Length: 273
Image (cartoon, rainbow, N blue to C red; front, side, top):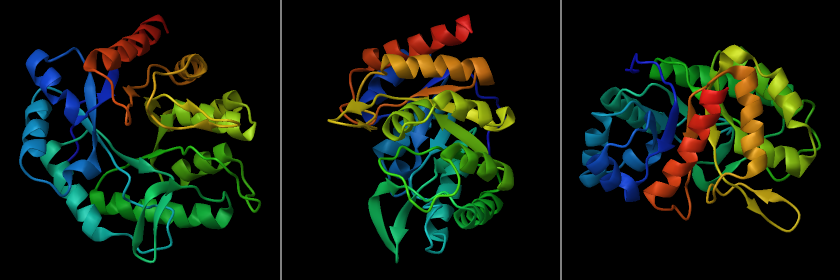
């Protein structure tokens, strides 16, 4: 199911407004990340364009629907559709988020955070193992962006994620923007966070832009990458090496040339690392 080719270099999140740019010019992008959920319940043009692009580039699948932190039963109807999509496009990796989006069978349009306790760790570990067994591959888990903390947490975020990827035998999708947002919002040192992460578990990096609100940073993925995130990305490269990196842009998506400018910045940092 999973494409055996190694992922490397800088990729871009595939967005429908850029289909024509990509197929007309075949730009020098190393790979594309596909938003899984956009292709699970659709036919026609989206799948046509995905098939055409997949002929030229490696891809990864990135979703929001596993609801790994929920106490609802795992949604195997969703996972079956995801597996079918993966069998078709043969992604290098499949990823989702450390979050929950469902309760009592109702799905929310939001990635909600979890308390960091041993009980939650055991719960999410078991669910990831079940997902991996069903999909037949190790998955990547993305660190969250959050705007509050739980008073009953007994572990730091980095302690929880380190324990999770090791106990579930999965990988980490390190979102550097999310890390910077959380460090700023909650007042911790992001370099200590990087230091504790096991190097062999970090398989992919996300870069995106945040929005400054009155007294916190908001993870919108709707801006160019800010200087402190670029600086933190350099620190991540120093620690983990040239991990495949994605430019992620989800709202107020700009022309293709703007996205490529961000990709070239990341490539330059990789080359100089």
